[in-house]
Image (cartoon, rainbow, N blue to C red; front, side, top):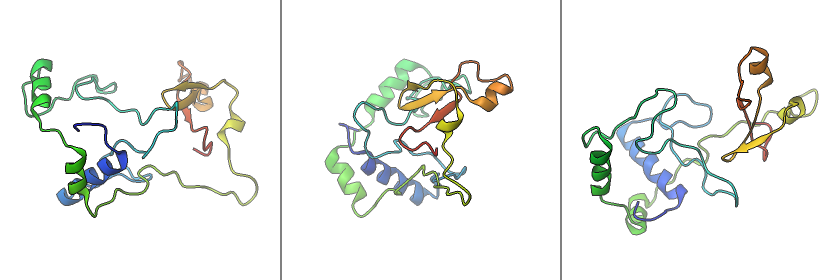
Length: 165
């Protein structure tokens, strides 16, 4: 992009391109399809948006870089390639998405109501302090810790705004 543009508009464009190419877009709890970022339209003051691996970063699980296919596999060539790509302006994006909308929610967690009592709230079941990492509140996962995992105390991520998730 030539400048920061609204996330909603960028998602509308990416989702439309995926649809035209026959590529599924992951929604809700689906496992199939591509993930589209950012996942939210706005970020609350003092918070961060979705964590993503930036271009040319090393994937933590795979332990390797994923190169763009338009250039040689070295950082200088990759950066030159990225610099050469025309940047999308606000006006151009507006023309591309006219009449198109992004899915309302790409990552919804269904609300669960319990017939025999109040909703489950994870905060009622943890006894370790929360700490903020990016826009997530994290703590030790009791189940993981019981099995000898989660030594760093960050396997459980909790939405403070909606502790059902």
